[in-house]
Length: 214
Image (cartoon, rainbow, N blue to C red; front, side, top):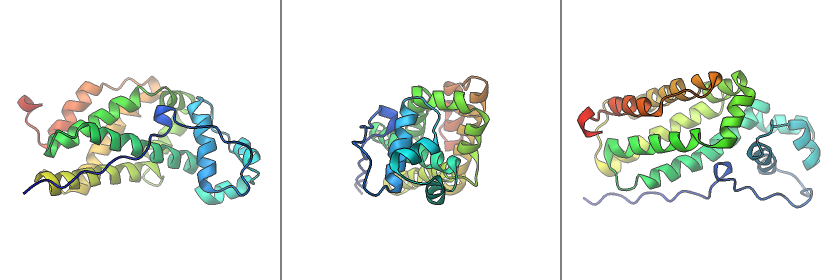
C-alpha cells in the first residue's frame, strides 16, 4: 500500500521573524491582533506587556484577559501557535524518514531549531521561572498542545508508515514531551544547558529505535 500524503506546513511565525508591523490601529481589534502585537514584542526580545498591547489596540486589559485568561495564557497561546509551525516544518524536513525515525527526526529537528532561536532564548532568560511555568504546566495552554502535536505525529507514523510504537500513542507522546521539558526547559533556568545529543539518544530509546541504527 502506498503511504498517505503528508500535510504541508503553514507559513512561519516568530521563529523566522516573519511578523510585519501593523499599520495604525485596527477598527475592531480581535484576538489575532493581540497575538500579532505580542509576537512583535517577543520577536524584539522584549517582555510581553499586556498594558502596552491594550493601549496600542484600543482595548481594555480585561478584554485581553477574557480572551486568553491571563498574561501567561496569552504567552502560552503565542508560543503554541508558532511552535506548531516550527514543528510541522521539522516534520516536512524529515519527509524521507518513516516510522520511529520520522518521529525522532521531527522532534530532534524541532528541538535544535527552537533552542537556537534568539527570541525564545531571550524569553527563557528574561522570565526564567515564570517561563518554566508557562511551558510545562499541564493546566496551561502550551504543554497540552505540545503533547497533542506529538500524539498526532506518532499516529501519522502509525497510519502512514506502519509504525508499531512501544506504547499507546498518547502515552508515548506525553513521555516524549515531558522528557523534552526536562532537558530543555528545566535546565534553561540555569543557562540552557540541556544536551541535545543525549536527548536525541534517549528519545530514540523511548521510540524503540535500536542504538546501532540511530
